[in-house]
Image 1 (cartoon, rainbow, N blue to C red):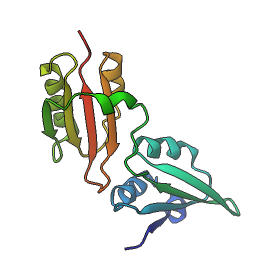
Image 2 (cartoon, rainbow, N blue to C red):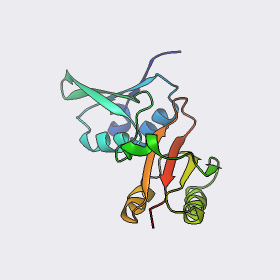
Image 3 (cartoon, rainbow, N blue to C red):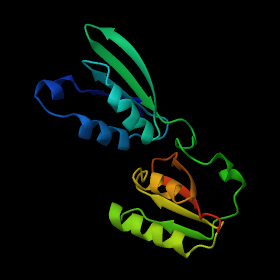
Length: 166
């Protein structure tokens, strides 16, 4: 297995196409320990935040002639930005949900229902296909805590939710 998977988006951009779908597909297909090496005709600053939300760190190297090499990799077992660091001291989950294979809407509905059914302070564990980026700010706004990370084997996103105290 190759440790670096290279995606040159210059031809995609030259055709007037948007490369984000190709980038995300390549990132989703990475095996544990692999790095996505992106070759672009500019420094893709907006992409850095998108990939950070997916659990990736990046390093960048100017190649000259307006070309850039950006390497994206997932750190081992890193918590996602915004995770509650005290999650390591939370009680064991009272519910375990495997929400892989469901539509995003269905997965989020089931996750929300499980959290609402939990008692104050209880923890719900969920395995999702990807990070529920739109849901996490809503949970925090409601006083709930969360901690999540991408599974090291690429099988999905692991999420712990702790129901707000009454």
